[in-house]
Length: 215
Image (cartoon, rainbow, N blue to C red; front, side, top):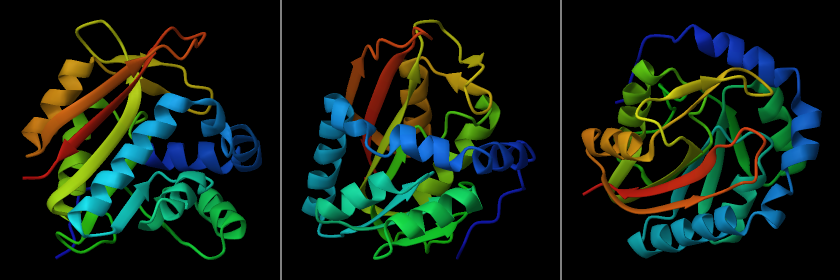
């Protein structure tokens, strides 16, 4: 059974914003992991753990130009990408014609219950208002098989509350890592690994990566 959450109106703005920067975004980020060893190795660890479950199906939510979907494929997963932006999906299909990419909202993934060994959410939820994040996490839990893995990456803040900031594409949020970890646990996941590192960003946020497993 596929979930049906209410349409989140802010996503219309997000879709339009990313549709307007497809080529620029792809030129800036498609090869960026070559200079980001922490992110690259966390994704490699995620892929290894998903392979260990025996269920190689994995989705890259918020896949953008498709570079991480292709990376997951190269790491041995049966990976496909989903994105809110039809422009990003079109670019990903042209850049990686052997892989599957579809347009979808994260609160209503076109995936069967318990079908996947892994979900990658690489800065995919940063634009989601805090009150709506539990619905997105519940949807990601829905599509995971028992023992499946979620790797979520986001901007982290040292403060006690999420912080809204002016992302270069559209407004976004940074999160206290402990608060985000609590959300994962509240969704029924078991967080078991985290990595924080300084991106040397002008925003001053840390980069955060959390790995969690569905029991």
